[in-house]
Length: 236
Length: 262
Image 1 (cartoon, rainbow over the protein chains, first blue to last red):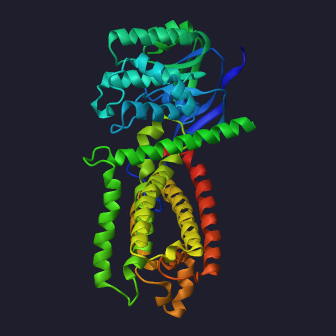
Image 2: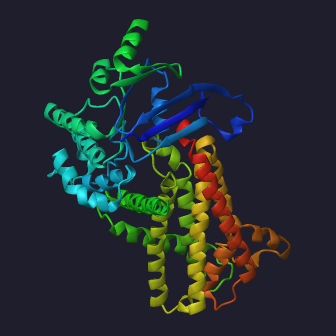
Image 3: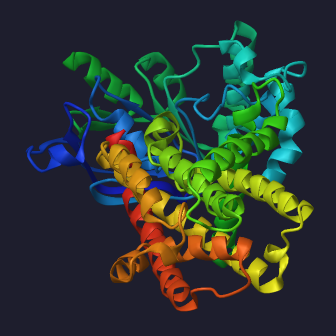
């Protein structure tokens, strides 16, 4: 159980600032402006550990999650992850409005790195959990925001990830579905690795024993969540 | 390690298949006649364009109508695919920002869905040719070269779309360049005219166009008996394979930075 799930060594990320759309014609004339979103970040997360990430806006939290999730590549440094990663950043990004709920389940499931066979097997469970039996063959543009969220959450949770990345979700869905999600999350919490970004310090304290405080692309303080949150609040 | 690679390869093809299916389905989902349009569109195209062109230009070619369609239908596949795939990564920025998956499936699924439509229209074209007794294309050699040419057209379109779609992320004016290029390319490729109409001193220039051999053999397999430009084809097939591999490597290399530029 003590294997490392996520290991970051000296991660730095440089962005080039664009004030307009980048074009080939322009690239010959304009100088590039650089911006470091992350500077020398190193930490390791053990399997099953829950790590909170806090910090003010534009501290580099989202960039960090993108790097761990494989969405972007660090400029320097090394990322190692073991197992399947699912990110609950935007649950409905993979949905296409013209396709039916069923077709969207398959596309989204494949995007979450499930195999077609796996989706076949879990299809009924996914639909049951989202409570969408009557609508699953209707086109997706007829779905309400809550229905989309329910289906997105259901697919993500049933994709059986080893590492879960959460960035400020759980605002949609009605009360009973939210409770169901939180119950499912608690079951999930027991064994899985979780990286949790939130401005809601109460939730972070509740879920994550350890935390990291990011500021201006650097780790300002890390350790027990209680102490990190205390120091963070004092600095404000 | 081996099991892992085969696993991710299977996953890649499952995702590519699902995206291609999505492209095809989404295009016709809202149409009243639905999938009937897949057949109706190429028929209308064949009748209208073929009719107009063969009335105006003829170049003194026998069976100009069939000669023209044999090149025009595959060209439409190429032009549509490139023009749609080039800006596709930018259009799918939402998905790329939010989810990790092999980005190749975005341009490749567009190419494959257009290829599917090409196969439908060629199927109708073959039925048409068969029905009116133009059977040259069904001769084994002609048919073989027809299929090989289509295959290499697919490979070239895939490789070229990987190049343009990945570069377009970093330079958004690539879309406009390729649109203009495709337009010029149409007239620089033997589609409206045969390769033999090119003056001798310019023919060498035409061999540099990797599509000239393919379109020449598409035309010849439809209306003539044999005589294919084998040497040119061989050289261009090698060039096409090279462009494809270059496209795959370039795309893989650039894809790491897509989300930073979207």
